[in-house]
Amino acid sequence: MPQPIVQLKNLDITYNIGKENEYKATFNVSMEIYPEEYVAFFGPSGCGKSTLFYSILGILAPSAGQLLVKGENPYSFSPEKMVKFQTSTIGIIYQAFYLINSISVLDNIALPLIFHSAAPGWRKKHALSLLRRFGIEQHAEKYPDNLSGGQSQRVSVARALVNNPDILLADEPTGNLDSISTKQVMDALEEINQKDKKTVIMITHNAAQLKYCHRVFYMKDGRVERVVSNPEKKQIAKIDRQKMIVSEIDTLSKLYPYSTPIELKVKSLVNYLTQEMPIEQVQKLERSVQLVLERKINKQQFFASLQAEQKNGGVGLSPSAARTAARETEKIMLQSEEVQRYRRRLEQNNFFEREGDLVRKISGFLAVEAGGNLNPTQSKRLKELVHQRVSGLIRQEEFAALAALPLPNGGIGLEQKTAQRLTYYFEKIICQGIETKGHGH
Image (cartoon, rainbow, N blue to C red):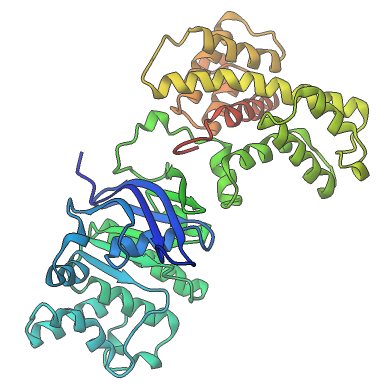
């Protein structure tokens, strides 16, 4: 396991300390980023992602805590060593490009090499090779103000790489680009990470770009709210893949990237309870479900809120619909506690037999949903699938396929509709059983 290339320990950054306008931008942030990782700091404006970014760059000193890059504290460097750090260890791509309009594109790329006493001939040759790599060699003698936004950003990428840095910092690299140029730049960053083995740290508020990353640090109000690993990427940081269960939460987090984990759980449960409610009623139901999930109201108060009239702040369900919704919500919440217990023991490496009490309980819940008429072979296979799904060894689609697979072929042998309904219900239990505090989903 490699050592972290960037390490933050309990990092606080406060602006204007001791002045009337003192402002604390980050709170007790800890993280480790590893060589060759591609990570993103993701969150709304003002969440602290740029503050961390510029602290790593070496231009914004921490107020408390520790920041290490390649095992060293850059803020202990002499001025000369800091210049070398900022031009050799780190390359930076800005949203606004920051090219010098009075010199050619070629000279813009070659400029950082001057600070390392590179020979003029080699500077030009190396800069041209980077222009060629990113498909803009024909613009070498142009001035930056004659380039498109996409061309300017590719020049910026080339300039960031010219000194062969270990770390590439990308500050909203596509914020000023159209969709075609955005894809070109994002593909270039992915290539730099995969081919050149550079560590890429990107700031973004574009959820569509998170798929490029190994991990995403979700930030809010100066804190890292959660860290999410991309199950589609081979992980570099030490992560137990068996614990990387991909649930409905992951899908919802892409649709609602600024929602908190509890808000995503609310959406999952409300989706199960509603069919064709108008949006206003769904929103009221979401508020009531959130209160009960957060244990701020009890089941009697929840039932009352479901059948109270909308003009009085309630959801406005009929008494029978309110009873059904309350019953289903309570059932899923109680059953999800078994998933949570299982997951907690798994994450603590406290393993137990597949036929353990928790697996039997969860399988029993599902057997009831499937109609309750499973034979011994079907029951055994259901327990095996429950173990595999809750452990993250198989995906939702695989669970559904195996549930519908005929018994002679190794499946449970359920009818297709029953298997789909059972899987849908199971995912709701899993979604509610995933821990919402700390890292990950």
